[in-house]
Length: 164
Ligand code: URA
Image (cartoon, rainbow, N blue to C red; front, side):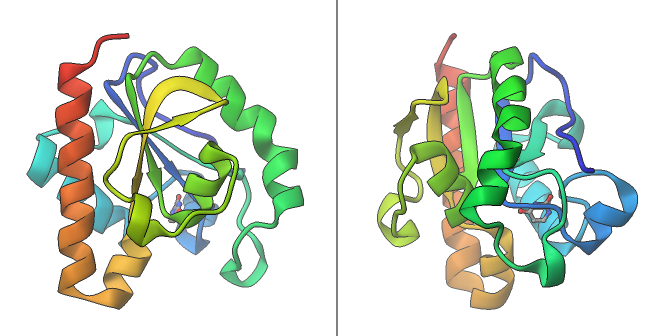
């Protein structure tokens, strides 16, 4: 099981999709290639490092063959994420990728339309900022890396401006 980790008073929360192989082996979220890119871009744009933010996922366990977690898997793990969200005071949550965005917004979206915007969620009073997933950025090249960089910069600037 890979639980969320980080300070409960973090200014920013990152919610990803699901643990991958390295996360499954180590027990820590976002430690693989995707996590490295995500945290590199976060530090570059906001100066926040891994230990400054709270990092978690929509589900606690790695889905077989790295597939997208199903709706049933997301709902059976929902109490873990909701418990974390209740304890956190961050004004801004970054929904990293389409699965986390769907989980927080409660409906499917097109990432190209919603990334880098302010959204609200029934699951938290924090502002939700959907961002491209770093795995999509690793596959999609410079344009998606730049879009993710912009999403994180926007979330970071919102977090420094917003009190909760
Ligand atoms: N690692 C995670 O913890 N979550 C993801 O969404 C991807 C990689």
